[in-house]
Length: 369
Image 1: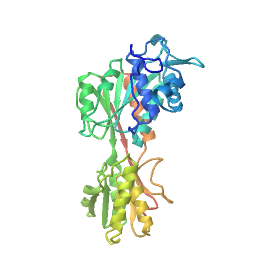
Image 2: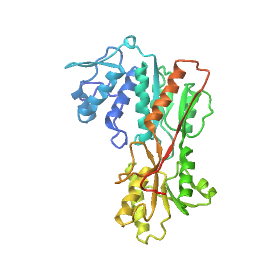
Image 3: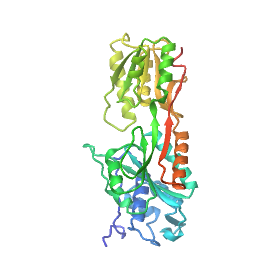
Image 4: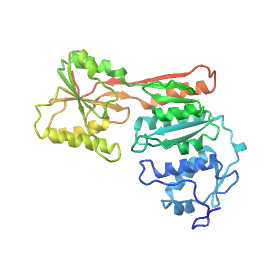
């Protein structure tokens, strides 16, 4: 057995300091996977908090947070002053294991809120919930090796928190029941249902608002768009154009906000005659950067230009008044999705999971009639 400088065997996972995923989340996933795959066996003592901190070269807060989560999941038992021990499987009383897969979405507010609400509901119903992050390389390929190890343990259901064809195909070949959360349908074998994000649901109300306000022109600022309003606006005889904002390198969402800030600063330096009646942003961080540039140049909102943005309920660009928005309530959506999935887990599994989460249009002070 290979030992490290601390007299402990080599760790089965590493911490990537360049990953947007938090260090405690990385340790939680790595240690959980090591337990579930048998690297650490039932009854085995784990390194103490201070030992973990030295091994990983991190603050003690990182292993403290990771161990606390695994204690709540029932994988380890904590003994003050003595460290932690891997719990016997027979001591666990889970009804089943639900695995969340979060592809490229550590900074996506809506996905994380939904996951948090669903985790709470599943845990209350007696299910073990674990979460696995999957990232793609510059060529768009996902490293699924760790996921493959995780799936060697019994999994009742996998919930994929974004539509990714490569991951869907992998789950289908592995013959694992899975649910996809996204805008498009997956028809592969072993996909047992969908949580559809009907993001376009609020568009007709937005377009009607534009028509009532006699809006003549709308500029859609996108990165690319998740909710494309241009076709409906043009159908309503409203001039609508798209402006794609190239994203600067860096960690999202800060890179998105900075991209919009710089793009608007450059364009506003040439004047304001190009401004339409309404600016519609397909991303709330695009809106935040643009609003900063507009206000810095003395553009009045809504007197000079009206603003509408996509935003999550409870989160949005900082502004002194209410922004008109196409709003997604991820909190309520997570509860609704959990209800449908729990009904499938505890009932007749011949019927697919079918749930729809829709957006709502909320008029605000930035777009008055």
